[in-house]
Length: 83
Image 1: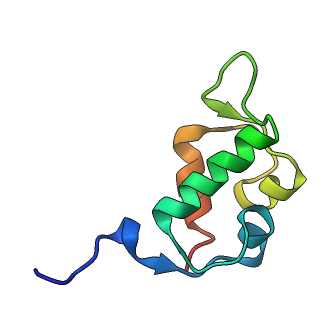
Image 2: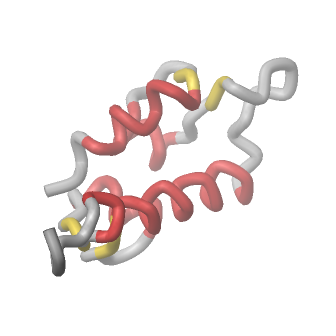
């Protein structure tokens, strides 16, 4: 199909909680993922013993939950905040 964009390139609306972490939308899913990782790295939220685990702070916890989460489950948690 010519002219269609893939899901990662289509701009989506963000929830208020997600905007508090990564800034105002709309932005693409790829941008969202990149900015969430930028936030995690800037705030040193990766577990020191197991880098695949994320230890959310209060802002990120409002998006992905308060408990430690695997980076593989984080994307699904973040996607619930996209419209």
